[in-house]
Image (cartoon, rainbow, N blue to C red; front, side, top):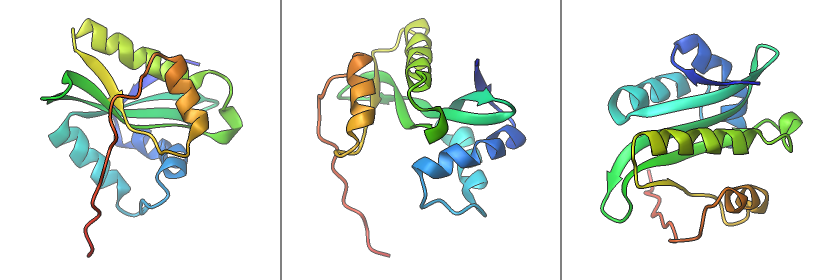
Length: 142
């Protein structure tokens, strides 16, 4: 299974199953326009792995600058369908993104993960990630 950079609306739509697994709050009616806006305005990219004409793993990432980490690739989203977990697909995607970072001479690859997602944390630690911060958010009431 090869990693593919997702570029077209059709390819993005084929990622819905794996994206909605990670982000169940997304609305199927408008998630595509959100991703297209992120790609256009925020340098968001998707790398995905396909199996039998179905995307089974994806990583949404962007290149950005931050005062605390320098020029980085930030991984917004990383998920594998449950049927394909344990096959090293997340590690492949992490390695792919690290390779991009090295080729671009960036300073780091950064991501956040849920405190309780110990399975993902094991993958990240095995791939060389370290705990360096606590991510806080103040959700605004609407």
